[in-house]
Image (cartoon, rainbow, N blue to C red; front, side, top):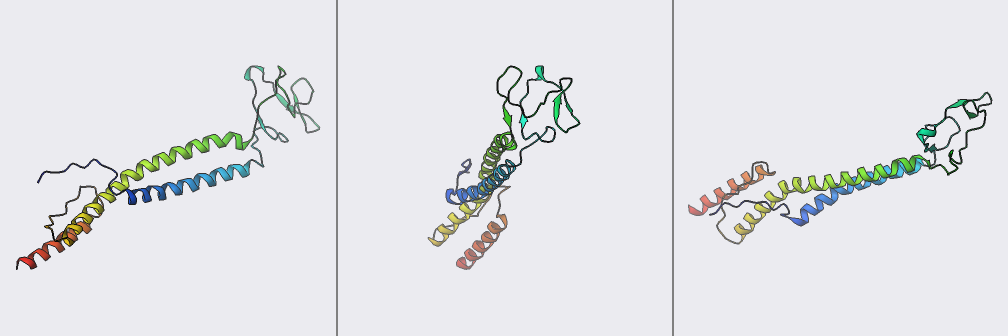
Length: 182
């Protein structure tokens, strides 16, 4: 009998798809919870700015100015004495881009979640292959046995799961064959 080299990773599609989707489902729920938490944070904006600043503002580094807290608690541009917040436009008159926590974190959370899902799908496929292969091999051997065909030794690959089950079935089949042969 010719030795088969198995490179097919989708051996038992129903089992492997169930395994992959179950594993990925956990990640999807995790991603949705993370996005939900970020959405809740949106109501309390991220602030790297002094008290009273509700948003992080994009600033042109070449035209940045220093701030100082005035005795009345407001912030003013250093040496100018004019109120700095709330900012409405930059030095060139264009409106400033304002960020809040949701804007800042949403894209990275989505990208990392998608990357995690892809990694889990790939891992699940290879991991489930080490389970589906032996299950498929054992199932085929048992189907042959039930059909009355000659069943050979169930041999699994080195890192496959369920090797103890295959060994036990091999012992049972060997014992049954001894009983038949007398």
